[in-house]
Amino acid sequence: MQTATPTSTLLGGRSPAEFLDTYWQKKPLVIRGALPDFESPLAPEELAGLACEEGVTSRLILEHGGEYPWQLKEGPFEEADFLSLPETHWTVLVQEVDRLIPEVGALLDHFRFIPRWRIDDIMVSYAPTHGNVGAHIDNYDVFLLQGLGQREWQFGHAPVEDETIVPERDVRMLADFSPDETVVLEPGDMLYLPPRIAHHGIARDDCMTYSIGFRAPSHQQLIGDFVSDMLEAIDPNARYADPDLTPPEHTGAIRPEARERVRTILRSLTRDDEALDRWFGRYITEPSRGRMAFPLEEPFAPDELADALRGGAVLRHGAASRLAFMTHDDGTVSLFADGNARRLPADLAFAGPLLTDRAVIPADALASHLDTDAFTQMLAELVNAGILDVMCPNR
Image (cartoon, rainbow, N blue to C red):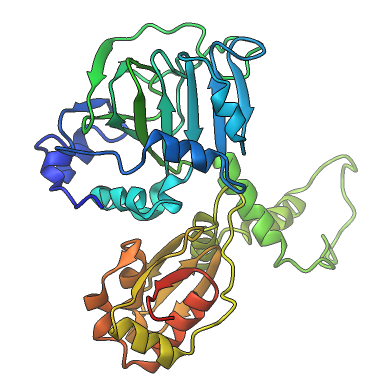
């Protein structure tokens, strides 16, 4: 498993504060030797195997060798699909590899200077010589870590405001792409790109790239989900009413008192900041791409789990799970897990950062709390629901 590298190396000698202030969502950055001596934790054959599994989101893009140029196929695939591929000009991409392979998930510990809830996933791609997905933009920040071979990256420096897409292709490709800079990345090198920076990556040989992407929901998505959530709490029998109605001077007029009633109804959706916070915590931790946790067939009793953790068992986030927390003025904490919220009293507030900061929760950090009944009860509930995994060699 890759060990954590000092952030100064990851960011090319810059502090996290300097990087965030100068580059984050502002301009691209090429970082040579971001992870020195990096070796890909995944082989191309293993990536192809993941692309053949049910429940894994994967794509195959064939510039040449498909039924037509730039054909896009979606997985799961069969072994025969890969055996019939041409020698060059194709790419396979697999989403959420961090949730499938612990060694890939461990890479996220290098990015702890960015809130964990902002991270979407690590997508891993493999391409033989000349493989690429065309010039394009992403609507989110991305770190492109070279894992195997060489990839040439061409990219701009200014965000694209209005892109023109090549028509009638499976893949969204820019019709007009004029890069400002071209670099070739070796294993361990990394390219950071802010949202909407045009870029084009071309494999120079057998090539694997680890794309650390970030969540950036659109305003439409945020507002749409919030309104949908709020609708569930509204009394379906509540209706517009005006018991103090008086005869109008003009029957076609929408009078000020009517407008104010409607404003009051709509404002009731957003004036409760705590409701907004609770909704957002649930929204941002909902598992993506249809993934879901599964309860254990043999659940742990709290004392059994505590004994297992004292005995060296490892606790980590479930493969489908997202966790985050919020602190409140009264000292309590809201813990969000897979779209659900639970309010923790002040004496359990420590569990918020403890359970959410890292995908693998250090045993020594848990040890001092295992005699707290409320804490072990909560741990057992999370483990039994499949939100946390316990790697217990003796069970």
